[in-house]
Amino acid sequence: MLIRVFNDKASLGKAAAEQAATAIRRAIAEHGQARIIAATAASQLEFLDSLTNTPGIDWARVEAFHLDEYIGLPITHPGSFRKMLLEQLVRKAGIKTYHLLDGDAADPAEVVMRVGQHLASAPVDVAFLGIGENGHIAFNDPPANFSAEEPYLIVNLDEACRRQQVGEAWFADISAVPRQAISMSVRQILKSREILGVVPDARKAQAVKVCFEGEISPMAPASILRTHANATVYLDTSSASLLSSALRNQPESQMMVS
Image 1 (cartoon, rainbow, N blue to C red):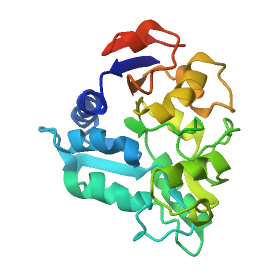
Image 2 (cartoon, one colour):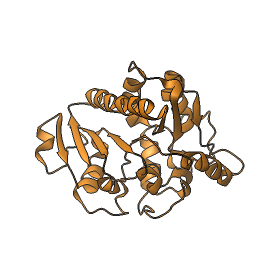
Image 3 (tube, rainbow, N blue to C red):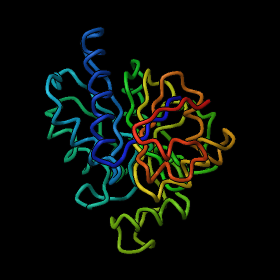
């Protein structure tokens, strides 16, 4: 796994978007289409804005999959990830083929099965991820299930995860945050040919340190990215501030982590 550190969120987002665009163009050139997984959250705004403004991407040949979504939350709610996916990526880019996780459906298990079948039908070229304050990837909170083979899971959200959503101002208080969600499984994420983690902000610094300097463990879910042969994690100086490496003093530097 490669870690890259930048001065700020804007330069981080631009660099990550350049790598993402290259991966998408390469997949289209080699396979006639690109299959991508997209995260949507406050941390992804600069990255997705840069990506959707990058020229030379044939978005009509891109198929997009949703990373996670709350159960019981309508698409009109500001915290809905499918709402963010549509606004931040799908509509801005002009993606025609996309698969939303309808967490407000009468039968979430049917959504898990149906979208999971589409996702597993062919390889994913590139996955865009964030990392939570508790170290989660998608909604795989600690202790994350590293062994589940299903593409999507119905998961319980821990308190730290739910408090993060309040801190990001999507919900008025923790009682308003759903207790369950649909999440792409860890194993499914790792099946992606390439993974890009976009992780700015000081509030992510402790998770970054635990996941990338501690043990690879379900208690630090994002630590599993260190086992992927083609994963790059983009940090800014704030999110990298607790790393013991000299990286924090050398913006726009790179370090291999295993």
